[in-house]
Length: 346
Ligand code: HSE
Image: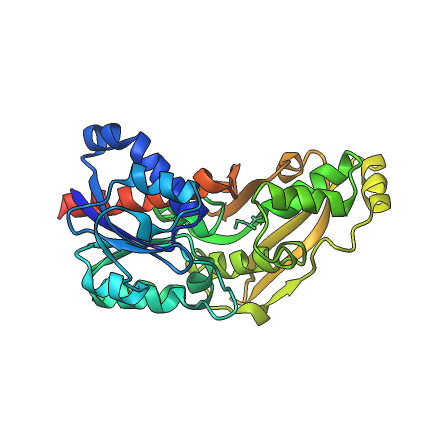
Protein backbone atom coordinates (compact mmCIF):
# COMPACT_ATOMS: atom_id res chain seq x y z
CA UNK A 1 0.00 0.00 0.00
CA UNK A 2 1.10 3.54 -0.62
CA UNK A 3 0.42 5.74 2.40
CA UNK A 4 0.18 9.51 2.41
CA UNK A 5 1.15 10.56 5.92
CA UNK A 6 0.70 13.82 7.82
CA UNK A 7 2.33 14.60 11.16
CA UNK A 8 0.38 16.64 13.67
CA UNK A 9 3.16 17.58 16.07
CA UNK A 10 6.78 16.98 15.19
CA UNK A 11 8.70 16.56 18.45
CA UNK A 12 11.09 13.80 19.44
CA UNK A 13 8.68 10.90 18.82
CA UNK A 14 7.72 12.11 15.34
CA UNK A 15 11.36 12.65 14.51
CA UNK A 16 12.21 9.19 15.88
CA UNK A 17 9.63 7.60 13.57
CA UNK A 18 10.93 9.65 10.63
CA UNK A 19 14.47 8.34 11.18
CA UNK A 20 13.18 4.78 11.19
CA UNK A 21 11.05 5.35 8.06
CA UNK A 22 13.99 6.85 6.19
CA UNK A 23 16.51 4.19 7.23
CA UNK A 24 14.15 1.27 6.58
CA UNK A 25 12.37 2.60 3.50
CA UNK A 26 13.60 -0.17 1.18
CA UNK A 27 13.06 -3.08 3.51
CA UNK A 28 9.58 -1.81 4.43
CA UNK A 29 8.65 -1.72 0.76
CA UNK A 30 10.25 -5.04 -0.11
CA UNK A 31 9.27 -7.12 2.87
CA UNK A 32 5.92 -5.60 3.84
CA UNK A 33 4.79 -3.83 0.65
CA UNK A 34 4.64 -0.64 2.73
CA UNK A 35 5.30 2.52 0.74
CA UNK A 36 4.82 6.03 1.99
CA UNK A 37 5.29 9.70 1.45
CA UNK A 38 4.94 12.38 4.11
CA UNK A 39 2.77 15.11 2.61
CA UNK A 40 2.31 17.45 5.57
CA UNK A 41 3.61 18.45 8.98
CA UNK A 42 1.93 20.88 11.34
CA UNK A 43 3.57 21.70 14.65
CA UNK A 44 2.54 24.39 17.09
CA UNK A 45 6.14 25.57 17.60
CA UNK A 46 7.89 24.63 14.36
CA UNK A 47 5.23 25.86 11.91
CA UNK A 48 3.80 23.85 9.04
CA UNK A 49 4.47 22.71 5.51
CA UNK A 50 2.30 20.88 2.97
CA UNK A 51 3.19 19.44 -0.42
CA UNK A 52 0.67 17.02 -1.89
CA UNK A 53 3.47 15.29 -3.81
CA UNK A 54 5.50 14.55 -0.66
CA UNK A 55 8.18 16.27 1.39
CA UNK A 56 11.88 15.47 1.41
CA UNK A 57 12.00 14.21 4.99
CA UNK A 58 15.80 14.13 5.13
CA UNK A 59 15.74 17.85 4.46
CA UNK A 60 12.99 18.37 7.04
CA UNK A 61 14.97 16.51 9.72
CA UNK A 62 18.08 18.56 8.94
CA UNK A 63 16.11 21.80 9.30
CA UNK A 64 14.57 20.76 12.58
CA UNK A 65 17.89 19.56 14.00
CA UNK A 66 19.38 22.96 13.17
CA UNK A 67 16.56 24.54 15.20
CA UNK A 68 14.96 26.07 12.09
CA UNK A 69 11.25 26.30 11.33
CA UNK A 70 9.29 24.35 8.75
CA UNK A 71 8.71 27.66 6.96
CA UNK A 72 12.38 27.44 5.96
CA UNK A 73 11.63 24.34 3.87
CA UNK A 74 12.21 25.54 0.28
CA UNK A 75 8.91 24.36 -1.22
CA UNK A 76 5.28 23.62 -0.32
CA UNK A 77 2.43 25.59 1.28
CA UNK A 78 3.02 27.11 4.68
CA UNK A 79 0.82 28.23 7.54
CA UNK A 80 -1.83 25.48 7.66
CA UNK A 81 -2.96 24.78 11.22
CA UNK A 82 -3.51 21.28 12.59
CA UNK A 83 -7.22 21.06 11.77
CA UNK A 84 -6.77 22.33 8.20
CA UNK A 85 -3.88 19.94 7.70
CA UNK A 86 -6.06 17.05 8.85
CA UNK A 87 -9.12 18.08 6.83
CA UNK A 88 -7.69 19.67 3.70
CA UNK A 89 -4.43 17.86 2.95
CA UNK A 90 -4.46 14.76 0.77
CA UNK A 91 -3.09 12.64 3.66
CA UNK A 92 -4.91 9.37 4.26
CA UNK A 93 -3.23 8.69 7.62
CA UNK A 94 -2.63 11.15 10.45
CA UNK A 95 0.24 10.69 12.90
CA UNK A 96 -0.92 12.47 16.05
CA UNK A 97 2.10 13.19 18.24
CA UNK A 98 1.31 16.50 19.90
CA UNK A 99 2.06 17.01 23.61
CA UNK A 100 0.16 14.87 26.09
CA UNK A 101 -2.42 16.33 28.44
CA UNK A 102 -3.84 13.38 30.35
CA UNK A 103 -6.28 15.59 32.27
CA UNK A 104 -8.27 16.90 29.28
CA UNK A 105 -6.86 14.80 26.42
CA UNK A 106 -6.84 17.99 24.31
CA UNK A 107 -5.99 19.16 21.71
CA UNK A 108 -5.26 15.59 20.65
CA UNK A 109 -8.85 14.33 21.07
CA UNK A 110 -10.10 17.02 18.67
CA UNK A 111 -7.34 16.17 16.18
CA UNK A 112 -8.12 12.46 16.32
CA UNK A 113 -11.92 12.91 16.10
CA UNK A 114 -11.54 15.28 13.15
CA UNK A 115 -9.30 12.82 11.33
CA UNK A 116 -11.53 9.79 11.93
CA UNK A 117 -14.65 11.74 10.91
CA UNK A 118 -12.80 12.82 7.73
CA UNK A 119 -12.24 9.15 6.89
CA UNK A 120 -8.52 9.16 7.75
CA UNK A 121 -6.60 6.58 9.76
CA UNK A 122 -4.87 7.74 12.95
CA UNK A 123 -1.77 6.40 14.65
CA UNK A 124 -0.78 8.08 17.88
CA UNK A 125 1.40 7.70 20.97
CA UNK A 126 -0.62 10.31 22.81
CA UNK A 127 -1.83 8.94 26.13
CA UNK A 128 -4.41 11.69 26.82
CA UNK A 129 -7.07 10.61 24.31
CA UNK A 130 -6.73 6.92 25.23
CA UNK A 131 -7.01 7.65 28.97
CA UNK A 132 -10.10 9.80 28.38
CA UNK A 133 -11.96 8.20 25.46
CA UNK A 134 -10.32 5.00 24.19
CA UNK A 135 -13.54 3.09 23.56
CA UNK A 136 -15.45 6.04 22.03
CA UNK A 137 -12.58 6.78 19.65
CA UNK A 138 -12.29 3.13 18.61
CA UNK A 139 -16.04 3.12 17.93
CA UNK A 140 -15.71 6.31 15.90
CA UNK A 141 -12.94 4.72 13.83
CA UNK A 142 -15.15 1.68 13.18
CA UNK A 143 -18.13 3.86 12.19
CA UNK A 144 -15.98 5.67 9.67
CA UNK A 145 -14.30 2.46 8.41
CA UNK A 146 -10.84 3.64 9.34
CA UNK A 147 -8.27 2.62 11.97
CA UNK A 148 -6.98 4.11 15.22
CA UNK A 149 -3.72 2.61 16.50
CA UNK A 150 -2.12 3.55 19.81
CA UNK A 151 0.46 0.87 20.57
CA UNK A 152 2.89 3.44 21.99
CA UNK A 153 0.75 4.68 24.87
CA UNK A 154 1.90 1.84 27.13
CA UNK A 155 5.47 0.44 27.12
CA UNK A 156 6.45 2.58 24.08
CA UNK A 157 7.31 0.25 21.15
CA UNK A 158 7.33 -2.87 23.32
CA UNK A 159 4.13 -4.39 21.93
CA UNK A 160 1.85 -4.50 24.98
CA UNK A 161 -1.40 -3.66 23.16
CA UNK A 162 -0.64 -5.87 20.15
CA UNK A 163 0.37 -8.72 22.45
CA UNK A 164 -3.10 -8.60 23.99
CA UNK A 165 -4.97 -7.93 20.75
CA UNK A 166 -3.27 -10.47 18.49
CA UNK A 167 -1.01 -13.01 20.20
CA UNK A 168 -3.15 -13.52 23.31
CA UNK A 169 -6.48 -13.36 21.43
CA UNK A 170 -8.81 -16.09 22.72
CA UNK A 171 -7.56 -15.79 26.31
CA UNK A 172 -9.58 -14.38 29.14
CA UNK A 173 -7.41 -11.82 30.90
CA UNK A 174 -8.31 -11.35 34.54
CA UNK A 175 -5.73 -8.74 35.46
CA UNK A 176 -2.32 -7.24 34.91
CA UNK A 177 0.63 -6.00 36.92
CA UNK A 178 3.66 -4.10 35.72
CA UNK A 179 6.38 -1.51 35.86
CA UNK A 180 4.68 1.07 33.66
CA UNK A 181 6.85 4.13 34.17
CA UNK A 182 10.45 4.37 32.98
CA UNK A 183 11.44 7.50 34.91
CA UNK A 184 10.63 6.10 38.35
CA UNK A 185 12.25 2.75 37.60
CA UNK A 186 15.37 4.61 36.46
CA UNK A 187 15.40 6.71 39.66
CA UNK A 188 14.98 3.66 41.90
CA UNK A 189 17.81 1.89 40.02
CA UNK A 190 20.19 4.83 40.51
CA UNK A 191 19.19 5.31 44.17
CA UNK A 192 20.06 1.67 44.85
CA UNK A 193 23.55 2.45 43.56
CA UNK A 194 23.79 5.37 45.98
CA UNK A 195 22.72 8.35 43.85
CA UNK A 196 20.42 10.91 45.50
CA UNK A 197 16.76 11.13 44.44
CA UNK A 198 17.30 14.68 43.09
CA UNK A 199 20.34 13.74 40.97
CA UNK A 200 18.62 10.62 39.64
CA UNK A 201 15.53 12.64 38.63
CA UNK A 202 17.74 15.21 36.91
CA UNK A 203 19.47 12.45 34.95
CA UNK A 204 16.13 10.91 33.93
CA UNK A 205 15.07 14.33 32.59
CA UNK A 206 18.33 14.72 30.68
CA UNK A 207 17.83 11.31 29.11
CA UNK A 208 14.35 12.33 27.94
CA UNK A 209 12.42 9.72 29.92
CA UNK A 210 10.49 12.12 32.14
CA UNK A 211 7.36 14.02 31.14
CA UNK A 212 7.64 17.79 30.61
CA UNK A 213 6.43 18.08 34.21
CA UNK A 214 8.12 15.15 36.00
CA UNK A 215 5.69 15.40 38.94
CA UNK A 216 3.42 13.23 36.82
CA UNK A 217 6.08 10.51 36.78
CA UNK A 218 7.28 10.54 40.39
CA UNK A 219 3.80 10.93 41.90
CA UNK A 220 2.56 7.94 39.90
CA UNK A 221 0.16 9.86 37.63
CA UNK A 222 1.77 8.67 34.39
CA UNK A 223 1.57 5.05 35.56
CA UNK A 224 -2.01 5.69 36.71
CA UNK A 225 -2.94 6.84 33.18
CA UNK A 226 -1.53 3.58 31.82
CA UNK A 227 -3.49 1.54 34.38
CA UNK A 228 -6.66 3.32 33.22
CA UNK A 229 -5.78 2.60 29.57
CA UNK A 230 -5.06 -1.11 30.13
CA UNK A 231 -8.14 -1.57 32.30
CA UNK A 232 -10.39 -0.03 29.62
CA UNK A 233 -8.75 -1.56 26.57
CA UNK A 234 -7.47 -4.95 27.79
CA UNK A 235 -9.83 -5.81 30.65
CA UNK A 236 -12.84 -4.12 29.01
CA UNK A 237 -13.83 -2.35 32.23
CA UNK A 238 -14.66 1.33 31.93
CA UNK A 239 -12.82 3.21 34.67
CA UNK A 240 -11.43 6.70 35.19
CA UNK A 241 -8.75 8.42 37.29
CA UNK A 242 -10.81 8.39 40.43
CA UNK A 243 -11.02 4.57 40.39
CA UNK A 244 -7.28 4.00 40.87
CA UNK A 245 -5.53 4.20 44.25
CA UNK A 246 -2.22 5.98 43.87
CA UNK A 247 1.05 6.60 45.66
CA UNK A 248 4.29 7.64 43.94
CA UNK A 249 7.93 7.17 44.91
CA UNK A 250 8.66 10.57 46.45
CA UNK A 251 8.48 9.23 49.99
CA UNK A 252 10.95 6.39 49.41
CA UNK A 253 14.18 7.29 51.19
CA UNK A 254 17.73 6.00 50.82
CA UNK A 255 17.18 4.27 54.17
CA UNK A 256 14.11 2.42 52.79
CA UNK A 257 16.18 1.26 49.82
CA UNK A 258 19.07 0.06 52.02
CA UNK A 259 16.62 -1.73 54.30
CA UNK A 260 15.01 -3.54 51.35
CA UNK A 261 18.46 -4.52 50.08
CA UNK A 262 19.39 -6.08 53.42
CA UNK A 263 16.13 -8.10 53.28
CA UNK A 264 16.90 -9.37 49.75
CA UNK A 265 14.16 -7.14 48.33
CA UNK A 266 13.82 -4.23 45.94
CA UNK A 267 11.37 -1.31 45.66
CA UNK A 268 9.39 -1.02 42.43
CA UNK A 269 6.48 1.24 41.47
CA UNK A 270 3.82 -1.23 40.42
CA UNK A 271 0.68 -0.49 38.42
CA UNK A 272 -1.97 -3.17 38.55
CA UNK A 273 -5.60 -4.05 38.12
CA UNK A 274 -7.43 -7.22 39.03
CA UNK A 275 -11.00 -8.25 38.22
CA UNK A 276 -12.62 -9.62 41.37
CA UNK A 277 -15.02 -12.60 41.43
CA UNK A 278 -18.04 -10.24 41.64
CA UNK A 279 -16.83 -8.38 38.55
CA UNK A 280 -15.59 -5.29 40.40
CA UNK A 281 -12.01 -4.18 39.92
CA UNK A 282 -9.10 -3.25 42.19
CA UNK A 283 -6.76 -0.87 40.44
CA UNK A 284 -3.71 0.81 41.92
CA UNK A 285 -0.31 2.37 41.47
CA UNK A 286 1.75 1.75 44.58
CA UNK A 287 5.42 1.22 45.54
CA UNK A 288 6.01 -2.43 46.45
CA UNK A 289 8.99 -4.15 48.07
CA UNK A 290 9.46 -7.21 45.86
CA UNK A 291 11.57 -10.28 46.66
CA UNK A 292 14.51 -10.52 44.25
CA UNK A 293 13.14 -13.70 42.67
CA UNK A 294 10.00 -11.85 41.50
CA UNK A 295 10.29 -11.41 37.69
CA UNK A 296 9.55 -7.69 38.03
CA UNK A 297 12.37 -7.18 40.60
CA UNK A 298 15.03 -7.77 37.96
CA UNK A 299 13.72 -5.07 35.62
CA UNK A 300 16.14 -2.14 35.95
CA UNK A 301 16.91 1.26 34.39
CA UNK A 302 14.09 2.81 32.29
CA UNK A 303 12.92 -0.62 31.17
CA UNK A 304 9.24 -1.47 31.64
CA UNK A 305 7.54 -4.82 32.15
CA UNK A 306 3.97 -6.02 32.08
CA UNK A 307 2.41 -9.31 33.16
CA UNK A 308 -1.03 -10.31 31.88
CA UNK A 309 -2.89 -12.98 33.87
CA UNK A 310 -4.48 -15.21 31.24
CA UNK A 311 -6.75 -18.27 31.58
CA UNK A 312 -4.91 -20.42 29.01
CA UNK A 313 -1.28 -19.63 29.74
CA UNK A 314 -1.27 -18.26 33.26
CA UNK A 315 0.97 -15.20 33.67
CA UNK A 316 2.59 -13.90 30.48
CA UNK A 317 5.23 -11.17 30.91
CA UNK A 318 6.71 -8.83 28.34
CA UNK A 319 9.82 -6.74 29.15
CA UNK A 320 11.24 -3.90 27.05
CA UNK A 321 11.79 -0.17 26.63
CA UNK A 322 9.01 2.00 27.97
CA UNK A 323 10.26 5.40 26.82
CA UNK A 324 12.65 7.07 24.38
CA UNK A 325 12.74 8.75 20.97
CA UNK A 326 13.08 5.82 18.56
CA UNK A 327 11.63 3.30 21.01
CA UNK A 328 8.36 5.27 21.02
CA UNK A 329 8.62 6.22 17.33
CA UNK A 330 8.78 2.51 16.56
CA UNK A 331 5.35 2.00 18.17
CA UNK A 332 3.89 4.16 15.38
CA UNK A 333 5.52 1.91 12.81
CA UNK A 334 3.84 -1.12 14.42
CA UNK A 335 0.48 0.65 14.03
CA UNK A 336 1.20 1.66 10.43
CA UNK A 337 2.21 -1.87 9.47
CA UNK A 338 -0.94 -3.23 11.12
CA UNK A 339 -3.09 -0.89 9.01
CA UNK A 340 -1.09 -1.87 5.92
CA UNK A 341 -1.74 -5.56 6.60
CA UNK A 342 -5.44 -4.91 7.16
CA UNK A 343 -5.86 -2.87 3.96
CA UNK A 344 -4.03 -5.50 1.92
CA UNK A 345 -6.50 -8.13 3.10
CA UNK A 346 -9.52 -6.04 2.00
N1 HSE B 1 7.48 9.62 31.22
C1 HSE B 1 7.12 8.34 30.74
C2 HSE B 1 7.96 7.28 31.46
C3 HSE B 1 7.34 8.27 29.25
O1 HSE B 1 8.91 7.67 32.17
O2 HSE B 1 7.66 6.10 31.37
C4 HSE B 1 6.68 7.11 28.56
O3 HSE B 1 5.29 7.09 28.75
